[in-house]
Image (tube, rainbow, N blue to C red; front, side, top):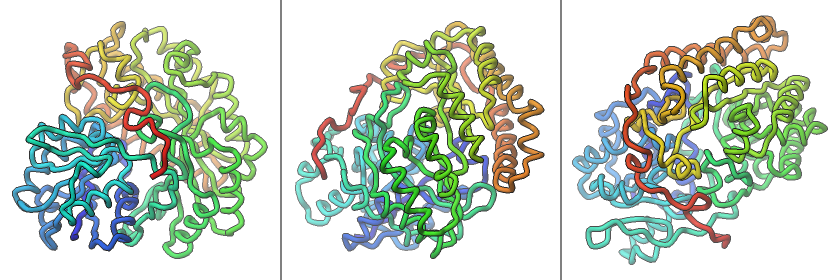
Length: 498
């Protein structure tokens, strides 16, 4: 079958400001198995630029596909673009199958199939196995009810098949690197870059995160194969930087250590950036020299507040002491700690924001990034926030960089000003400025200055959008987005392998 994988434009602040793009890993992970199954697959990446609607349709019509598979990495904030494009694609390709996959449609499949009549199928959960099964069933004219992990209309009504089993062997879903020209992609200030996953899921229970529910269980790729693939990308395609998409690639000390040792043994020079938990950095204090030799340069550490009560409420499982220790350990070993702090929890007051600022000054992070607590349906936080009022009804702004929830004790405009004040005070300290402009290590200097330049762009976008929230709070979360689902493993509680 002729298949077009479409990555639609995504206008969220974080994806647009750097003016650099990474290859769409999700599409490549689905594309590899489809190619191996004998299909003619091509990728239309409409995010760089971004492409106009007319440009997307023109690209599709150059070689009209029999199936258009639409997915995105933007979850809620990218859905409005898909809803706008679907009727245009249907008009241009009336006979094509239109398939929609990703986190948002996996949890909103009923609304998608009701509100978007042009979309024929939703792939729920992991698509590397489910998408090829769906295409095979369509080619064979088989009963779609036998394909696990999809949703479609039966007798005119949305219908979901049983959840697909969890994919245990992540190396079996080959990444279709042949679908992209890696010379077109860069990050980190012009470095040729890719995004990869060492693991899926998360063993922790943070209420604001959907990793555990969507991916079901934490699992990782073979450490040796993963390092070997990175070395191949460096040698054959000139890749200089790998952005790890995992929330917690370091969850298994044994597996992570094996990966780092193998990567060092390959002899390639590559920069690794990603996210992890402060607890793991403290746990691996003795391994941090190995981290550095392998190319690790920056880790994002999610603080999610500096108040122990807030950490307990969101089930973070961390402590202020470990957060501070992790920042110091990274700096001592020539790596950068990018610390995110989240605001927008129901109990917050002006005094909480003032205390947050004081604690951040004590933490002394290299870089900081603010996010707003956002109640996506696939997180336990959705159920906790069902009664709260929404101040932002434009789903394209549900990207963690815009306020979407009312904070009862602090008006939205003042929450925004507190966040900007905190960022300015922490980032403009003499010590912080010295790390940017007087840094002697060339890699660290480049990283600090690139992030600072990107931060200026984010600030301008945030101030431009600052008061697009509702002057008065609107409907409750449950009224606006509908009832929630099971908070943990909502797609599949089973452990059997695909």
